[in-house]
Image (cartoon, rainbow, N blue to C red; front, side):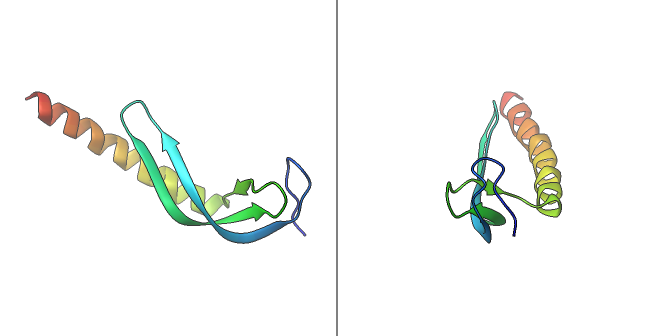
Length: 73
């Protein structure tokens, strides 16, 4: 059984919302596979999920910068 790092509650597989607040934008991704604590509701994303999200964020950062530059030109 996997235990929560915060409250030692039991972790169960489910879906969570990933949120990211940047200076230039805010990102919400719903229904991301995660481990969720049955007790405190803290969520944890597995390494492979985090890697995909990080790759997406890097690409999004580039695109957001292009949009900002295009608006100035």
